[in-house]
Length: 510
Image (tube, rainbow, N blue to C red; front, side):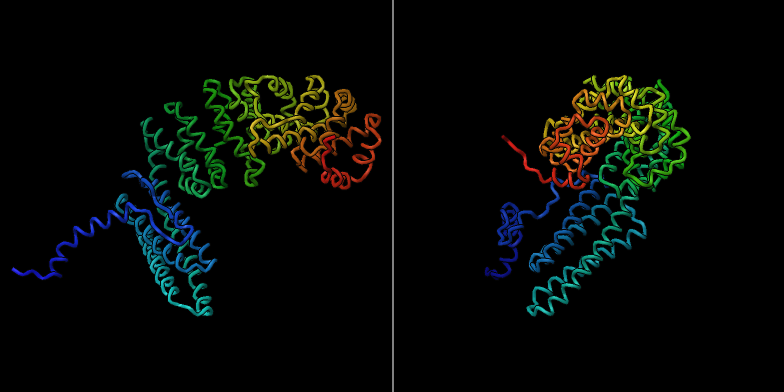
């Protein structure tokens, strides 16, 4: 019986292509493009039934692809632009398909966003394919503008779809926290919400808008959930890095709740420390939108008193850091706080803590302490308290703050400690007694060393300016403590001239 060769080949094709596919999948791609090794693969994939992880992983991949396509487009690498556009379409289609499978129901708004996204993906693939056939540079230039516009619109549609999907998932989490009476479900869901806050400000805004702050404060007001307070408060501190979070906190009397937790000693130290972290966040001087918390002023005295006590009784460096950071931010928030701290003997508490390695063991903690001292030093009474507690010597020690590890964060913290220590000295030395004590402890020689030796201040201009100001203040009280050369170079000229002289000074190793 004669069999047609084409028919036989068609019958055998399935087996042949199976083997061929396996070879291709297992082999490494061969490409002349240097950057193909950096092609994005969604390794492992999200777990089954986990829409949040799916959205976050696919979202990251697609965002990265969009950015890279933009880079290749700027370089006129049309072959790569097209291949990456095709891959982008596959990623987008996979995200839409997988999320629809997991979520099962999709709103009309999301359905429209999905449709617009896929249309733009198809349009991008088609137009980049046409660009590969064009050789005329003028035509390519006009088409490049079209591709760029399509890519921009695609990014907008993708952002809208991702926000809609994430909002839907956040709503489900918040609803579960709000309605659950089960401690284990609430703990798990709050943990998921906290993980989302670590993905950045956009997600924190979504959580705040969808009632996350309200639901978490509801947890913090139920005695049956006391063991979950630290976790809920930690999540609140993360959400309140955005304006929407702080506004929601104000609406639900969050400050009053924090004050109640801080002043209630039946709460664990961990709970009060996390409440202090929320206070530190909402009073941060780096956030302009936190400066109008009227409810905070009403509860400030109670909060400051509780924070000082927490500093005094802290069992670890982490607890002390959170409490002192909150106090440091409050001294920026309102001037009355400094007067309260003075009345509460805060200087004694803080300076005593400096001698306790269990509480104060990092430049980050000393940064908080010296910030409080610098802000309190504007008060006239502060000088006598500083002398009484041997504070000048401790401040001088902060002028010699050195990093242990050399990491950029630690080096920056040491620079802040040195700068603020110099600022504190300059302010305190209005008091002749403090100035005399500083001279007796050889503060002037240390300030001169910081000015003249860039390595001593890590070449920081901020530290240099602060040291020059402090040195000039001390020289006005005790000019005999300076050599003529120091006086002529560091004190007598304009501050700018001395700064320029020292900032360009090469170190002498003789």
